[in-house]
Length: 366
Image 1 (tube, rainbow, N blue to C red):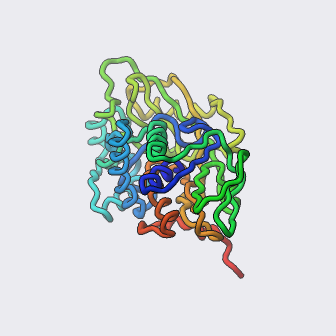
Image 2: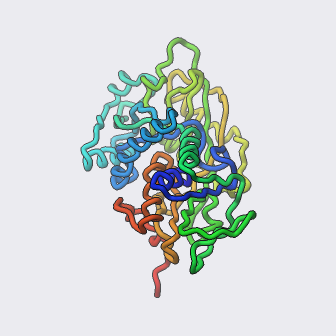
Image 3: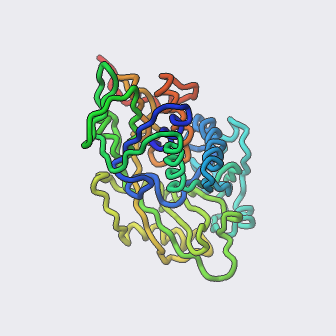
């Protein structure tokens, strides 16, 4: 979100300085792991749909400006029982906005997407405007645009405080104290260090790549296997991707991790964490073995209600707070970056961000 904000601010002609405690793109936060799902029939809430629709041309703009392949459209399947939230919510969002979706019964899923093993009562919603984004490449491309437009990236510099001063906003780091006209805080898992009144929790997540079976042509290629989200009894929400290397597929559970300290994340993955996903590929996917090729950990920064935190700081309108995207934010990066640019430059945005208001976390006076 910080890289996206810097890109969108620099594109408007703003003088941009970005601080990062590491050297992005990196694998120490929340924006890595080779692939991130993007979709339009958003079961988390229909108010997300207009923002999602804005992201697709912005991703294409970034691709054109940098000569980088970032967005691949595969479609997306939301699989579950007819009453599953992923199914009902996707259909509701599609109905509200006239989206291109199809409701598939179990026999249609088996016939069209034979890699999925489904029960007779299962259904799937096929969202046509969906696919995946490459997060490391996207962050690198955004940073490239910031620098090409005259912006500055401060790598390996941790910000310890953001102070409200009469003459501007002071940013304190181990290198210096500097004053700026406006500041955007997009610190992800480290947000609590700078905005301590936000009630956030940080959750460790495990991503796993399983080997494909070696039995002929794979049906799990991007052209034949949409990204998917499945709400499965006994395992929870599982999501996955087509193969990007011809040898493995990435599978993960959504919101099944332990609380963690972003400074001391356990990077090793235990058999106990792998077992549910091994059971998933054994019982619900064809053409995938239980052999683990590699694992990666990342972090979700969660709000209590699972929706984003975006807005002007209640004590200083020169400070914008974004991020805390509860594990489903990367796909929104270009438009959230543009919203942050609106707030930083204009003090308001025309987009509807009422569901993401920071004030919903504040104690009412009296």
